[in-house]
Image 1 (cartoon, rainbow, N blue to C red):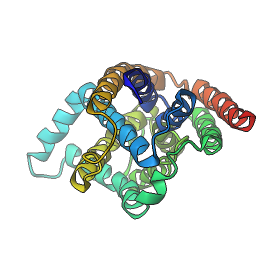
Image 2 (tube, rainbow, N blue to C red; image 1 turned 90 degrees about the vertical axis):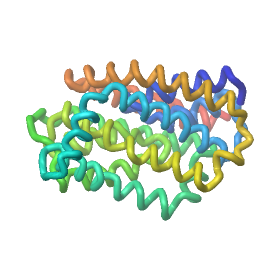
Image 3 (tube, helix red, strand yellow; image 1 turned 90 degrees about the horizontal axis):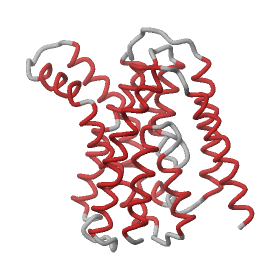
Image 4 (cartoon, rainbow, N blue to C red; image 1 turned 180 degrees about the horizontal axis):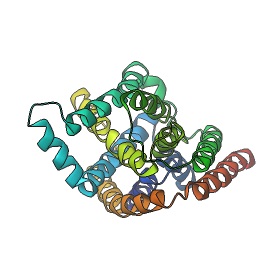
Length: 264
């Protein structure tokens, strides 16, 4: 992987992390097209670094929300911010368990299995189509909803299943407001990404990688800048209830991915 590849993959990650089209799935497709021969562990490392960049872009976009949450927590009493933080923690449980118990199995999925990615994109398309048909409400995410949404987030570790698409769709299908569902979806993943980066650092995965530091840095910057633009755009799109367009896109790309693999 060279600098140009890192820029391309970084931009893809930054754009697709917030748009409900599966960033991991698009990264696997891009690696296949670019001829990336990285072993699964290295591919996963680069993917995690790019996710870290988009997590930072999330914090920048939602900096006021994050500041309010920390301000409320520092009051050391039960309030709206404390309740929201508890919901975030509840939503993290399923994905954290899957990450700890099935880490090695998950790494093998990031090795260019394009047919698998294609079928998962079709599932994402179905979820988005169903969510688009749901009526919008003013309901906020409840604690029980948070756990169910967390299960969707855990399933979305599969390349081709959009994390934002799965969590937003699940939340909307549970009867929650679409804008509030998007806000919760974007914020709930940030602690998990930071935790994953910390774990990889402590385990030595980053230190022993063969990927040049320059490639990781360039990819990080590209993903961060693209993430800032995509996050802002996605918030506006969710408010206008345009999930059906993404459903069509995922369906078409999924079919192309499956056909591409069979042809090769």
